[in-house]
Figure: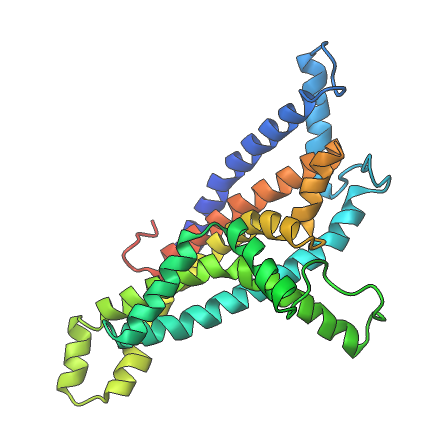
Length: 304
């Protein structure tokens, strides 16, 4: 019951943030050239806002001035690619960070630990845009291992095994770049948490009663260290939005991040406004989910 009330409270807190964000997005749109002109009537603007927000909630996002089709149709097509990219980057992040963090936490201050820490700090030091550009240069142009742009070869028949393998081939490099920063953060977090848990009283007790070292690490320490990482899921949604805009633009990957930049260039006001609102909604909901998960998995947080 406490968890339910805690979740409802966080949802109620998020609603004013969404409303305020929608007002800011709409009024910025209305201030664009050739939208309202110089005659600002607050009553008319307010009526237009109510009409827009109701249409947004019901999925009627208007017509794109560049594509000349409903915005929702373009978003459905591009969102699929962004979701595939996001899920792939999360899999890379969690798999790599689990194995590297587990090894570094169990063998602190060894050569392997220092090597992993060096990789982590390198990943955190370079901006994503720099990593993306150099990845294309080395792995696409120099080594010719991966394609430098797109999501699939247009000559491959859709729905075939070759089609899905080609999509995977196009996906590996941008997904790896998108997941690199989060991998470094999660690996270091898991390493430090394993080391911290290994020094606690329940571990000393387990060793004193004869529990094997393997069971202590794999059951007691690792289980407790993995729980807080669950809370990162909400923040991942925020990071994927920010990263998708950069990665998709550099790799010319046809997702909503690249669509957003193209809509700005083409002055597609309806597309820009709705994408800005969608990105803001994802960020607010992501932070809300992280807040709820943190309160659920961490007993030190009061749920009242």
